Image (cartoon, rainbow, N blue to C red; front, side):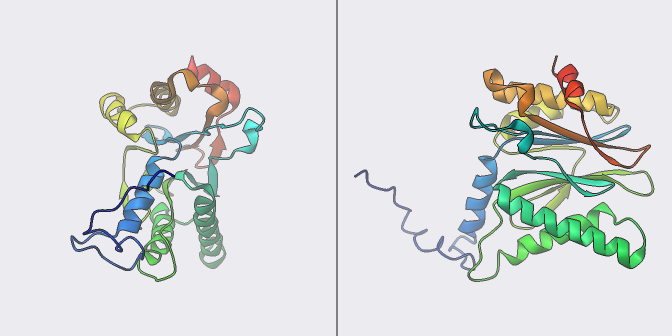
Length: 242
Protein backbone atom coordinates (compact mmCIF):
# COMPACT_ATOMS: atom_id res chain seq x y z
CA UNK A 1 0.00 0.00 0.00
CA UNK A 2 1.38 3.38 -1.04
CA UNK A 3 2.11 5.60 2.00
CA UNK A 4 0.05 8.79 2.28
CA UNK A 5 1.90 12.14 2.16
CA UNK A 6 2.34 13.69 5.60
CA UNK A 7 1.58 17.27 6.54
CA UNK A 8 4.46 19.31 7.96
CA UNK A 9 4.64 19.12 11.74
CA UNK A 10 3.51 22.74 12.13
CA UNK A 11 0.32 22.01 10.11
CA UNK A 12 -0.76 18.68 11.63
CA UNK A 13 -4.16 18.89 13.25
CA UNK A 14 -4.94 22.42 12.13
CA UNK A 15 -6.84 21.22 9.05
CA UNK A 16 -9.26 19.06 11.06
CA UNK A 17 -11.51 21.88 12.22
CA UNK A 18 -12.78 24.90 10.34
CA UNK A 19 -12.67 26.96 13.55
CA UNK A 20 -8.97 26.39 14.28
CA UNK A 21 -6.34 28.79 12.99
CA UNK A 22 -2.87 27.44 12.19
CA UNK A 23 0.10 29.12 13.94
CA UNK A 24 0.68 31.31 10.87
CA UNK A 25 -2.92 32.59 10.94
CA UNK A 26 -4.49 30.43 8.23
CA UNK A 27 -7.73 28.44 8.05
CA UNK A 28 -6.57 25.38 6.14
CA UNK A 29 -10.08 24.09 5.40
CA UNK A 30 -10.79 27.36 3.60
CA UNK A 31 -7.65 26.96 1.52
CA UNK A 32 -8.70 23.42 0.61
CA UNK A 33 -12.07 24.82 -0.56
CA UNK A 34 -10.25 27.33 -2.79
CA UNK A 35 -8.27 24.44 -4.33
CA UNK A 36 -11.57 22.67 -5.03
CA UNK A 37 -12.70 25.68 -7.05
CA UNK A 38 -9.43 25.62 -9.02
CA UNK A 39 -10.27 22.04 -10.03
CA UNK A 40 -13.76 22.98 -11.21
CA UNK A 41 -14.78 23.71 -14.79
CA UNK A 42 -13.98 27.16 -16.15
CA UNK A 43 -16.54 29.99 -16.04
CA UNK A 44 -16.15 33.50 -17.46
CA UNK A 45 -18.13 36.69 -16.93
CA UNK A 46 -17.92 40.03 -18.73
CA UNK A 47 -19.48 43.47 -18.48
CA UNK A 48 -20.07 44.70 -22.03
CA UNK A 49 -21.22 47.99 -23.51
CA UNK A 50 -24.77 46.69 -24.06
CA UNK A 51 -25.14 44.21 -21.19
CA UNK A 52 -23.47 41.36 -19.34
CA UNK A 53 -22.38 37.90 -20.50
CA UNK A 54 -21.69 34.62 -18.71
CA UNK A 55 -19.98 31.68 -20.44
CA UNK A 56 -19.11 28.34 -18.82
CA UNK A 57 -17.66 24.95 -19.67
CA UNK A 58 -20.07 22.09 -18.91
CA UNK A 59 -17.21 19.57 -18.76
CA UNK A 60 -19.05 16.53 -20.17
CA UNK A 61 -17.21 13.55 -18.65
CA UNK A 62 -19.24 10.75 -20.22
CA UNK A 63 -20.40 10.32 -23.82
CA UNK A 64 -23.69 8.89 -22.58
CA UNK A 65 -24.60 12.07 -20.69
CA UNK A 66 -27.18 14.30 -22.37
CA UNK A 67 -25.36 17.68 -22.72
CA UNK A 68 -28.60 19.68 -22.31
CA UNK A 69 -29.11 18.07 -18.89
CA UNK A 70 -26.02 19.80 -17.49
CA UNK A 71 -27.01 23.26 -16.27
CA UNK A 72 -24.33 25.89 -15.66
CA UNK A 73 -26.43 29.04 -16.07
CA UNK A 74 -28.95 30.07 -13.42
CA UNK A 75 -31.54 32.83 -13.37
CA UNK A 76 -31.67 34.30 -9.87
CA UNK A 77 -34.14 37.02 -10.82
CA UNK A 78 -35.23 38.39 -14.18
CA UNK A 79 -32.31 40.82 -14.19
CA UNK A 80 -29.74 38.76 -12.22
CA UNK A 81 -27.90 35.58 -13.27
CA UNK A 82 -25.11 33.37 -11.94
CA UNK A 83 -22.75 30.59 -12.86
CA UNK A 84 -20.19 28.73 -10.78
CA UNK A 85 -17.07 26.62 -10.52
CA UNK A 86 -16.55 23.89 -7.94
CA UNK A 87 -18.93 21.46 -6.24
CA UNK A 88 -22.27 21.55 -8.05
CA UNK A 89 -24.58 20.66 -5.10
CA UNK A 90 -22.95 23.41 -3.01
CA UNK A 91 -23.62 25.93 -5.79
CA UNK A 92 -27.25 24.81 -6.12
CA UNK A 93 -27.84 25.49 -2.41
CA UNK A 94 -26.37 28.99 -2.67
CA UNK A 95 -28.27 29.81 -5.84
CA UNK A 96 -31.50 28.53 -4.29
CA UNK A 97 -30.89 30.81 -1.30
CA UNK A 98 -30.29 33.76 -3.65
CA UNK A 99 -33.47 33.03 -5.63
CA UNK A 100 -35.48 32.94 -2.41
CA UNK A 101 -33.95 36.27 -1.33
CA UNK A 102 -34.97 37.83 -4.67
CA UNK A 103 -38.53 36.52 -4.37
CA UNK A 104 -38.89 37.78 -0.80
CA UNK A 105 -37.63 41.22 -1.83
CA UNK A 106 -40.13 41.39 -4.71
CA UNK A 107 -43.06 40.43 -2.45
CA UNK A 108 -42.02 42.76 0.38
CA UNK A 109 -40.97 45.87 -1.55
CA UNK A 110 -42.66 45.35 -4.96
CA UNK A 111 -39.37 46.17 -6.69
CA UNK A 112 -36.34 44.43 -8.20
CA UNK A 113 -33.52 43.55 -5.83
CA UNK A 114 -30.10 45.07 -6.51
CA UNK A 115 -27.22 42.77 -7.45
CA UNK A 116 -25.09 43.57 -4.39
CA UNK A 117 -27.87 42.41 -2.05
CA UNK A 118 -27.87 39.03 -3.77
CA UNK A 119 -24.08 38.83 -3.48
CA UNK A 120 -24.13 39.73 0.21
CA UNK A 121 -26.80 37.09 0.92
CA UNK A 122 -24.62 34.41 -0.71
CA UNK A 123 -21.44 35.57 1.00
CA UNK A 124 -23.05 35.88 4.45
CA UNK A 125 -23.99 32.20 4.31
CA UNK A 126 -20.51 31.28 3.06
CA UNK A 127 -18.90 33.23 5.90
CA UNK A 128 -21.01 31.49 8.58
CA UNK A 129 -19.56 28.20 7.37
CA UNK A 130 -16.03 29.40 8.14
CA UNK A 131 -16.65 30.00 11.85
CA UNK A 132 -19.09 27.29 12.95
CA UNK A 133 -17.99 23.92 14.32
CA UNK A 134 -19.40 20.92 12.50
CA UNK A 135 -19.64 22.74 9.18
CA UNK A 136 -17.33 23.00 6.20
CA UNK A 137 -16.79 25.83 3.71
CA UNK A 138 -18.80 25.82 0.50
CA UNK A 139 -16.59 24.30 -2.18
CA UNK A 140 -17.54 26.71 -4.95
CA UNK A 141 -17.09 30.22 -6.27
CA UNK A 142 -19.90 32.06 -8.04
CA UNK A 143 -19.98 34.68 -10.77
CA UNK A 144 -23.04 36.84 -10.10
CA UNK A 145 -24.04 39.40 -12.70
CA UNK A 146 -26.98 41.62 -13.52
CA UNK A 147 -28.35 44.90 -14.79
CA UNK A 148 -29.64 47.40 -12.23
CA UNK A 149 -32.74 49.58 -12.53
CA UNK A 150 -30.53 52.60 -13.30
CA UNK A 151 -29.04 50.77 -16.29
CA UNK A 152 -25.63 49.93 -14.82
CA UNK A 153 -24.15 46.46 -15.32
CA UNK A 154 -22.54 44.58 -12.43
CA UNK A 155 -20.31 41.51 -12.15
CA UNK A 156 -19.15 40.03 -8.86
CA UNK A 157 -16.96 37.07 -7.90
CA UNK A 158 -17.70 35.34 -4.58
CA UNK A 159 -14.98 33.27 -2.91
CA UNK A 160 -15.60 30.07 -0.85
CA UNK A 161 -14.99 31.89 2.44
CA UNK A 162 -17.48 34.73 1.85
CA UNK A 163 -15.32 37.41 0.27
CA UNK A 164 -16.47 39.20 -2.89
CA UNK A 165 -15.14 41.69 -5.43
CA UNK A 166 -16.64 43.56 -8.35
CA UNK A 167 -15.01 43.02 -11.76
CA UNK A 168 -15.27 44.21 -15.35
CA UNK A 169 -14.31 40.73 -16.54
CA UNK A 170 -13.49 37.65 -14.46
CA UNK A 171 -12.75 33.95 -14.66
CA UNK A 172 -12.97 31.13 -12.11
CA UNK A 173 -12.10 27.45 -12.26
CA UNK A 174 -9.33 25.34 -13.72
CA UNK A 175 -8.61 27.73 -16.58
CA UNK A 176 -8.13 30.80 -14.39
CA UNK A 177 -4.33 30.95 -14.74
CA UNK A 178 -4.54 30.84 -18.55
CA UNK A 179 -7.67 32.89 -19.14
CA UNK A 180 -6.99 35.83 -16.79
CA UNK A 181 -3.91 37.07 -18.74
CA UNK A 182 -5.90 36.54 -21.94
CA UNK A 183 -8.75 38.73 -20.64
CA UNK A 184 -6.37 41.38 -19.34
CA UNK A 185 -4.91 41.65 -22.82
CA UNK A 186 -8.06 41.33 -24.95
CA UNK A 187 -10.95 42.68 -22.86
CA UNK A 188 -12.24 46.19 -23.54
CA UNK A 189 -15.31 47.85 -21.95
CA UNK A 190 -16.52 48.84 -25.44
CA UNK A 191 -17.08 45.18 -26.42
CA UNK A 192 -20.64 44.24 -27.31
CA UNK A 193 -22.24 41.13 -25.83
CA UNK A 194 -21.68 39.32 -29.13
CA UNK A 195 -17.99 40.30 -29.01
CA UNK A 196 -17.86 39.20 -25.36
CA UNK A 197 -19.28 35.80 -26.24
CA UNK A 198 -16.65 35.36 -28.98
CA UNK A 199 -13.86 36.43 -26.62
CA UNK A 200 -14.97 34.05 -23.86
CA UNK A 201 -15.24 31.13 -26.28
CA UNK A 202 -11.79 31.93 -27.69
CA UNK A 203 -10.45 31.83 -24.13
CA UNK A 204 -12.09 28.45 -23.49
CA UNK A 205 -10.64 27.12 -26.73
CA UNK A 206 -7.22 28.10 -25.44
CA UNK A 207 -7.84 26.13 -22.22
CA UNK A 208 -9.63 23.06 -23.60
CA UNK A 209 -7.62 22.75 -26.84
CA UNK A 210 -8.59 19.44 -28.57
CA UNK A 211 -11.31 18.76 -26.03
CA UNK A 212 -13.23 21.89 -27.00
CA UNK A 213 -16.68 21.45 -28.53
CA UNK A 214 -19.77 23.63 -28.79
CA UNK A 215 -21.73 21.03 -26.81
CA UNK A 216 -19.58 21.86 -23.77
CA UNK A 217 -20.50 25.55 -23.80
CA UNK A 218 -23.32 27.11 -21.80
CA UNK A 219 -23.85 30.86 -22.14
CA UNK A 220 -26.33 33.53 -21.07
CA UNK A 221 -26.75 37.29 -21.19
CA UNK A 222 -28.73 40.20 -19.77
CA UNK A 223 -29.04 43.22 -22.07
CA UNK A 224 -29.16 46.83 -20.93
CA UNK A 225 -32.17 47.39 -23.17
CA UNK A 226 -34.38 44.56 -21.96
CA UNK A 227 -32.89 43.93 -18.49
CA UNK A 228 -34.01 40.31 -18.82
CA UNK A 229 -32.09 37.03 -18.50
CA UNK A 230 -31.72 34.97 -21.68
CA UNK A 231 -29.73 31.93 -22.76
CA UNK A 232 -27.67 32.19 -25.93
CA UNK A 233 -29.17 29.80 -28.51
CA UNK A 234 -26.93 27.00 -29.70
CA UNK A 235 -26.64 28.38 -33.23
CA UNK A 236 -25.36 31.70 -31.82
CA UNK A 237 -22.71 29.83 -29.82
CA UNK A 238 -21.69 27.91 -32.94
CA UNK A 239 -21.27 31.14 -34.90
CA UNK A 240 -19.17 32.65 -32.11
CA UNK A 241 -16.95 29.56 -32.03
CA UNK A 242 -15.99 29.77 -35.70
